[in-house]
Structure formats: C-alpha cells, structure tokens
Length: 74
View 1: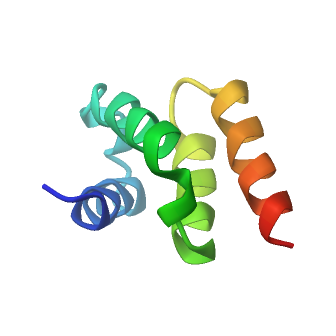
View 2: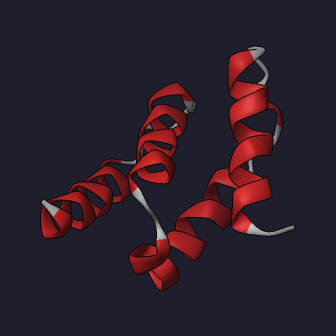
C-alpha cells in the first residue's frame, strides 16, 4: 500500500472513531515520513497532524518533525 492509500485508510478510521484499531500503522507512517518528508505536500502534512492528535500516543517528536517540514516550505 502506498503512502497516499495508507493516509486515506488511517483518515477513514479516524473519522469513524476506530483510529486506535491499527496500532502499527502510525509507526509505519512515521518511518515513511522520516525517509520521505520532502514528498509530503501541505494536505498530507495536515492529515498527519490530525492523525497524531487523534492517536492514543501523542508523538511530540513526530509533530516537531512535521513543524520543521512546514517551516522549510513557508
């Protein structure tokens, strides 16, 4: 599954309240982002922030990495 499909899958589960169903998906998304952050456009970055905010584990390091990526683009 590509990252776009992965984010759509995660966002769908977030919207219906089952985001915590797949505990490994956030880790996979985080690892992909660390390697490919330059490929993420603003809509995907915003989706990531929503997913982290809705996750049972608030990953401050991941949020900081997203913030740095956004700051580089602004």
